[in-house]
Length: 419
Image 1 (tube, rainbow, N blue to C red):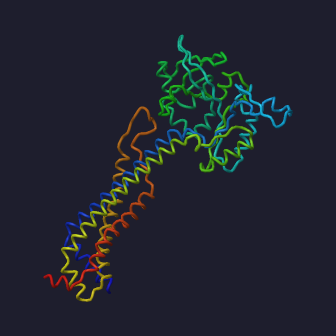
Image 2 (image 1 turned 90 degrees about the vertical axis):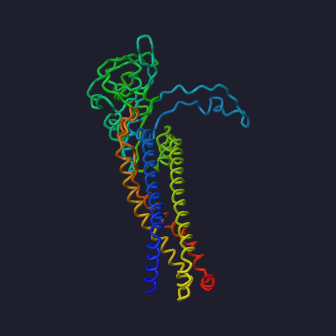
Image 3 (image 1 turned 90 degrees about the horizontal axis):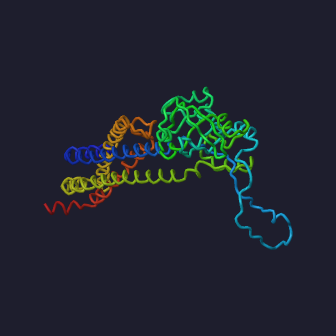
């Protein structure tokens, strides 16, 4: 019965100061709306920027890096133990970039329950021959089907089709930057030269655009068979094995395991792209800081309104306490008022935040540098809505708690004497 009476008194006070109550609720609504929209947009932007690299990056990359021998011939002699040898200007080993036993490694990886898929690759540094000018570049020999399945390769081909790469012998998909520099059209033939002097004429069947200009100026794609032909190597010649995992977080541990198991160099996606993760973390932190600041500002608005209400309702508070209401009851009345403002404003804020996010997500965003993006990116993460709802309740609770403590300590005798 007492709870019902406290609720009725709280709503009576709310209706008595409806304009101020509405202003407080609008403040909470605006804060939650902007909090949701800001975080959704920034998270979507983070996903977009990260995916420009991460979509095209394997979770684990296996390769053979040419390094100087750690143990030199003089160290193998076993004489003069206890002495040190100082050898300067050590040269790398006379070795190939080829991954040995690549077929066996690929078979083992495909049988690994952690592995989603495997895509072999052969990278070839080349020169594009443009008249008397040679432009540096890299041709990546790929398994087209695996590349499409694991790295959405087709999404980045802005002209032409990846199937033409499989069906047309000696064909190439040029990076859009390289094509513009050479004034090449789809269907043209280009000549390339390796650093060993091997030459081959290739037919351009499409253009590739990653959205990163420096990559698009040098990088192009062909089939593994074509790159092996350019290098005059056998069908077993593979320089990279790209691995996609079901769980990307396992990449660092699996990279170390593969390094020992297959005796090749292995690098995980977290190590290879640490700078992008740092950038995403900073942008997310800024977004949360701005959003929470908006909620705190709204909380101060509610605090001020409730403070003014207490001064204006001194008589009512005195009468309540004189008729038997305790300080805890008065405290409960004003906290109920604050929480009502927070719940109503917060609920409307969540709805408007979802609506504003959806509206932003429909705005066209067309740029030549990002061919896969058509509208502004939005991330509808439910955690943003949970954080907004919880924080709005906490903020409004404390905004009502401190004024309510002041109201609960009012001595009705002093108020009546003053009158």
